[in-house]
Image 1 (cartoon, helix red, strand yellow):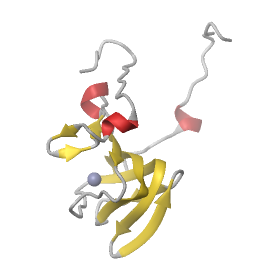
Image 2 (cartoon, helix red, strand yellow):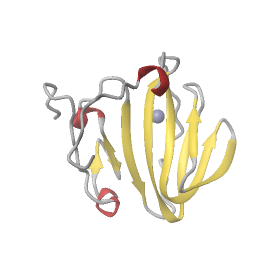
Image 3 (tube, protein in one colour):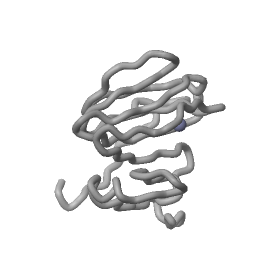
Image 4 (spheres, helix red, strand yellow):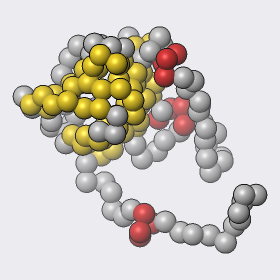
Length: 139
Ligand code: ZN
């Protein structure tokens, strides 16, 4: 559980190879970051699926859009009746109503999934980022 008094939190999940063996709430190869890091604006998960593995259901969301970021490997993505290949570097946004599923290819698949309430982003880097005067030891 994250320390909410500090301006940051750190969680080390270990290697992707070890992640495939972990199980949370009946889901293998998945770790949710919201509770581990004390996230307050989004939920995120890191996922690792062995070759040929897949989540055995299609799902949608009520309010949250999802961003899938493929970190390693390849596979296939399904949204609303369409299936397409994905690989390292693929980024997929799915609107809440999109019915989605994911399957690992022959080399397995590691990906991150970030879910956030659709339409909640009111500003981003250009408007929200502030460069401060602070210097680190490497500057
Ligand atoms: Zn989802």
